[in-house]
Image (cartoon, rainbow, N blue to C red; front, top):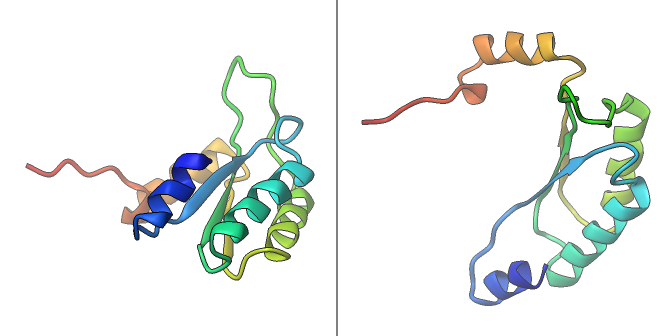
Length: 108
């Protein structure tokens, strides 16, 4: 986190992103991260990404209520908090097909 502050102090504003993994990173931890970002600048945007289960890993996908709770907690500290979360791998694949924003594109 010291690097985040150092980069900001050099005049570079970068958005903050964090993957929210239930049972690993809880609402309290997300609040601490948002509090740190707010100490640097409460106008820095913070995007919370919902964890999507990976085979062989012990963590589950999150519930919508958990994402709402973590967003509300972060909003106590920061002015701009956004979230994204796919409820299933099928939903993810559908979005990738439908929307270029989710696709990787090779240039040159």
